[in-house]
Image: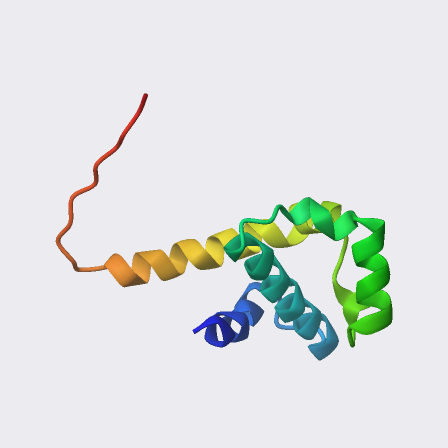
Length: 102
């Protein structure tokens, strides 16, 4: 299912976006998902030790942007994609929302 999400990520790019930019978008989406699923904050992407590891040991590791670029560009797109997927999952289903506040 995660690969399907990454494939759908391209719809957030303009139609004139190059294939390389779409591939980078898919890499970024997968990178956002991985630390988030492990409860690791995205700001680790700016860590110099991690950057060195990605650049030297991971194919296309340099394509993963630093955390400031994630917040400026990719987080909103991933949020919108996840929101649409959630809407599709609950469409036409009966449910109750319970809002808890302290």
